[in-house]
Length: 128
Image (cartoon, rainbow, N blue to C red; front, side, top):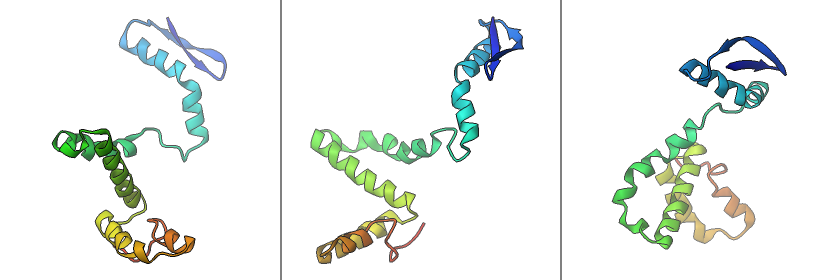
């Protein structure tokens, strides 16, 4: 039998552990501390859908990308994907931001110049 456990005490009702409801109650009981933490810190996402959505286009296309069949190709792909997703996360249109960075990178001479090219600092590209 599965029991619902709440704040250290066992509450009724009891359900058979073999059926779907019992499995769900057992799952809830085994993850109770995580659920309580999520409720206490409401800014935490309850799922990883944002991360899954970000990588989905790359999962779909990976069979078509022949240049990723070597470790160096995979590393290059990963670095490019990271730049693209970082730009998106900072509400920059990736192509415009990358173009802007590549056009201005050769003239950067200081830490401030480089920091101004980062997607969270860059003001001169198209926003999403």
